[in-house]
Image (cartoon, rainbow, N blue to C red; front, side, top):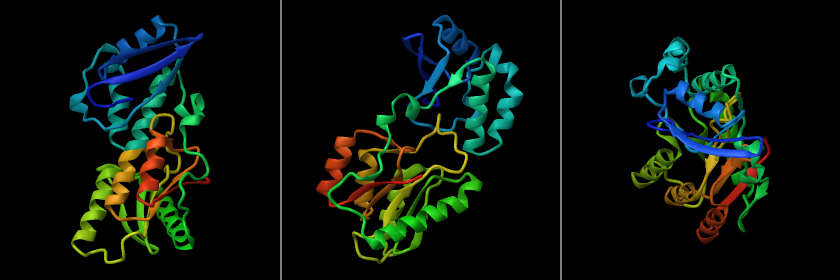
Length: 249
C-alpha cells in the first residue's frame, strides 16, 4: 500500500484477483470497487509514507469517519495503521498480510551469505534488539546500528536509508572511530506493530547502505521481514563481504 497520493490495493476473492488505484481518503470509492469485484480479502503491498491530513482527497464516506481518522493521526505510525486496519474491518473486509499469502517472500532463519556473524556481531545484534525492544513503546523506529555493543544510531522518521547515511557521515567526521567492517544494522518490528500493513523490509538498497556505512552485516527477524530481490541482496552482500542473517522472532 502506497500512502501518499495513491492507495494501491491487491485483492483476491473466489479465486479472482483485481488491482486498482484510488487516492488516499476515497474510502467510499475504494470499498465500492472492492464490493463490485466481489473481494473480501485485502492485501496491502508496497512502502509506507505517513501522509498529512491536508493531502487526503475526501469523499462522502471518508467524511463520515473523519473523527476516527483525526484521532488516528494524533498517535504514532502504529496507532495510525491499526486505525486503518479497523476501518477495513468495519466495512466488512478482512485485512491479510503478505506473509500469510506468500510466506516465501519473507526472510528465512539463518545466514543467507557466505559470511556468518562472529561472536562480536552476535553481541551487537543482541544489544540492538534490546534497544529496539526498550524503545518499542514509544513507536519511534524499527532499526538500529550497534558497533562493539555501542548503540550509535536509531531509525527515525527518515527511515533506514537515512539512518545508514547518518552512520556513514559519522565515520567521515570521525565521530565513529572503530575500524571498518565492524557493527551491525538490525531491523525488528515493534511490539504490537501492524505487520499486515507495515512489515520491515530488506532489499539491495539496504545492503548498499550498510556497505557505505562500513558495517559487518545485517540482521532482521525471520518470518517478519519482507525480503525484496533476494538474489540481488545475497550477491551484493557476498561481493562486499557482508553477512545477512535472519534471527528468531
